[in-house]
Amino acid sequence: MWIVLLVLFIAFIFPFILVVINVFKTKGDITSDPLALIGAHGFTLKNFPEAMKKMNFWRVFANSFVITVCSTILTIIVSSMTAYVIVRNSRWRFCTIVFSLMIASMVIPFQVLMVPLVSVYGGLLGVLNHRLTLILMHTGFSVSMAMFMFHGAIKTNIPLELEEAAIIDGCSKWQTYWKIVFPLLTPTIATVAIINAMAYWNDYLLPSLVLTKKELYTIPIATQAFYGTYSTDIGLVMAALLLAMLPILILYVFLQRFIVEGVTAGAVKG
Amino acid sequence: MFAGPGTVLFLAVVVIPFIYGLYLTMTSWDGVSAVKPFVGFDNFAAAFADGDYWSAMGRTVLYSAVSVILINIVSFALAYMVTQGIKGQNFFRAGFFVPNLIGGIVLGYIWKFVFNRALVAIASAISGGNAPSLLSTPNGAMFCLILVSVWQYAGYMMLIYVAGFMSVSADVKEAAMIDGCNSSQAMMNVTIPLMRSSFVQCIFLSITRCFVVYDVNLSLTNGEPFNSSVMAAMHVYNQAFTYKNYGLGQAEALILFIVCAVVGVTQVMIGKRGEVEA
Image (cartoon, rainbow over the protein chains, first blue to last red):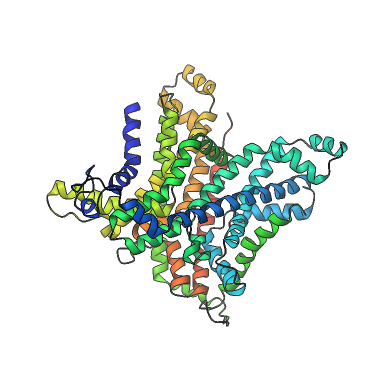
């Protein structure tokens, strides 16, 4: 069975292997023989710097990075606080309404919201083309699922007695939350962080609608634009695709255990 | 208030656009002018009459059905194989998940290269002539889309099934073996029913993801050849942003949402009713 797995595994990563092989060949070589390990004209490193320059890679990478990190942090803070309030005040009608509304909204696909979103925030309010707008939007869309996960975690793992003890000892509500409850939510925080960060990093549709200026492009948008312009120069395209994949692949090599655990935990709880 | 920011953002980004969207379905706005003429339910009538929309929808249903079945078969098989205690199974688990790490756009372009160049080279070498690419025919493009989606999601669903496999305690399986089952009977009658919630979850996730496929559609085929591989989400996008029929696009998006929600929720309800405890 080990051999079956190995064969399947190679079949799975075969496309990636193909990209890596072809990045180091000249355009003509790739076209004439895409499967050869070394091109007839030899090993070339030229594709990388050219693609990086034409794609404006570092700027694009910085955009993706800033947006992903800020959105993830904001989502975690905001959703956990919302979940906390809903769990601790579960008798308030308002809280149950908000909770049910958020759960129900998880079925709504983005396509239903994208047109009004763009017309309200673009046409009406004109706040598009700011990274902050995208960060806030990302957070808004992710609050429902993240809140649901925190809600489950708080309900099952954080006994009320612990908080009451803290209040007796003189903590304010704010301190009770940040010093006692939040640290205890670490596993859920990790899960939410990983799932959402991956989604934000790879998101194409929402950012493409919000960020239309070239300097603000994120990696997926830049990849699509790059392909549109340079699709005939297949060597550059290979390099661009590899560059787009490299950050998350490198991260995966180091954090693979956490990522796999996070995704599994997220799926099981959700 | 504590819950303030979260609720406000949620309302601002989800609830208000949704309600505004409902209003938009009743207008014939072109996205630019300040006037939004009210047209009542005309857009819905137009949506039902829009042949392209229903072809795209039909294609999406076909694509989703086949993909969901294949994704779940492949991921279940993979999950089974990586929970047998084979050496290096953690490596394989991590490895099969890699396609899901990469976003749809990059995946689509990579496979476009594979289909258009690599496979064509292999096919040409075998047949000695100039073989056409799989992406150049409508059925071929559909096949390619399904293949890429299965490849993209199999690893992710595999992880869910792995969690499901691990949740079935070995004692139950042992008891079944003692009672006379062979291993395939044990699998069919004990393990799989106990993993029902994993199935429900995986099928729900794959249905909802496949119905609204867009990224891979855009990069792999971009609707080629000749708009024969435009899926519902792409059609909605084009209707609103390219053809500037915002009201009609929104109406079609709403119909897509209703279809997807009905299918997904029905599937979950049927699944949950049969759930068993050990």
